[in-house]
Image (cartoon, rainbow, N blue to C red; front, top):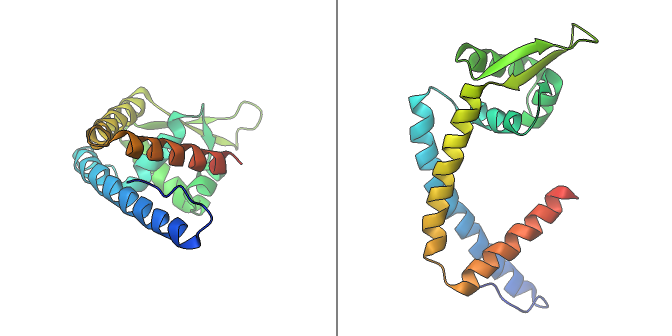
Length: 153
């Protein structure tokens, strides 16, 4: 996946974007297939897993935070949390300053699931990256930094 060095041409940028889209789709398909198999064992949906990944990087999230991050209504977020709580992947707590405020945090069981899935994804990606030459690996690293820069902005 060698990216064009000339940024002057819109055609070359379009071709680079097409190649990158193919790479993303390929890696996503590879990772999602493994992820799907593993998540089905634990009766976890993709939205539930995505919520767990959000929670794994935070001390807690409020129900409104969850709704916003997931692009759901608060009622839908509550249903998502209900199912994860029944499976012991998350727990609810009341805020000390306002008992009406519900905070959700991931449990050790939820953290273990996220960690296991992350290792599976990393293993899949390592296999893909191992087959790349230096230029392809550099292009992936450059693209990763550019995407992270946009996310942080």
